[in-house]
Image 1 (spheres, protein in one colour):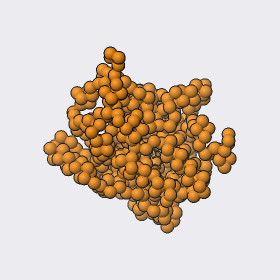
Image 2: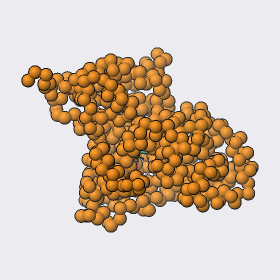
Image 3: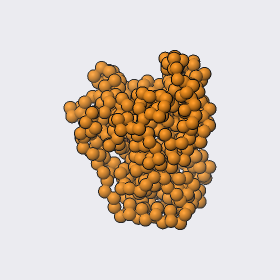
Length: 496
Ligand code: FAD
Ligand code: SF4
């Protein structure tokens, strides 16, 4: 029929985070992929993030063979010629771009468990109630029958967080096997060579150091990471999920965020496989529930909030934090930092482009919020420094969860804490130049003193929040507050 396009002439445009088999419709579909060096010239990304993304894209192109046109170009628009179909991109900027281009059909998003329509239905049931993660998660579990016995959650409880908040073991080790590490190949060698060349040409600069590729770059490798995690590490995941160890950044975390965010694994498969392992009796319920909650709950929840909250959300700044990020932090100068927690975590980011959830929230994010660094700059920093950082996931996690810049949409109170939390949940404080309980003087812990200075600065902003009543009452009782405020003003932007 005149004008009707055959499926063979309509190519699927794959962005660099749409690399799994579920982003194409069949084994013959022609594909377009675009590699842009200009993306890396515009912003300073972690070297290992640039490596991972390019390696994953080139590996996918090699798998697709002749049916993939792989083009290197400065801008997408110059080569993205239709007719094309594309799965809903993951950032507002990319969505705007594909909407502006002629002859590009946008398909519903893939790579998330709950669809936009299902999320919309759920929000409509809420009326004026908050869009709570806990309720969203329970709705998804019920709808999909995940970890359910009929209408009831397996084991009778929806939430096993109370069993999953143990401090680290005193031995300094979880005693679990290391994660599965990928072996680099000739594609990685070529990527490393290209990145070295771009850097030498002077138009591209990177953050952090180069190192062996630690994260899966193909669907096959991602499957290996997942299987190894499920059989050898998931059982230990739960209890120490929130703990930190100076000598082991990975602990029993899955290392699946990077491959999942590249689109290499379909999250519902990950969830179903975790449930199967639990049902086989091989892992405890608390660990399985904790892990499923992260994916079916948190990961999808932040994805939907990113779109639901609108474009202005990324610029919210409820606490009017306007200070720039200091150079030592921005450039990962871990060796300049005496505070052992911060120095260890910055060194891990420098060396791997990754740390787990709690160092992100309670060390890096906590410090940034206490010191009043501009939330949009903190988001940008996290996005560039982390191998799994993408706009959709960084904006809610940083603006909402970590910096309280949305004024309480995501978190009911700021995730601010002093050194005693870090002391309880890690082995950092023992070897530190500061003492977690000391507020003033040479040994004053910058997190503890910073916490009180933060509460003082935001006393009015937080006064109406009943969850902050007790900490604010504690602030009123501090005898050395004046001295502490002078000390913290002096600490200013220098490395603690
Ligand atoms: P695990 O601890 O094994 O958890 C399993 C999976 O759950 C993760 O792979 C991830 O896909 C998902 N998950 C858990 N929590 C979240 C969450 N809050 N948001 C989205 N997914 C979640 N995660 C990212 O994928 N990209 C980011 O850019 C990112 N930035 C963050 C920034 C801050 C300030 C904070 C507090 C959290 C951020 N997270 C981000 C969430 C979380 O820290 C990482 O997903 C996790 O540490 C990745 O390691 P893992 O794969 O071993 O996760
Ligand atoms: Fe961090 Fe304070 Fe503990 Fe030192 S004493 S490791 S600065 S929390």
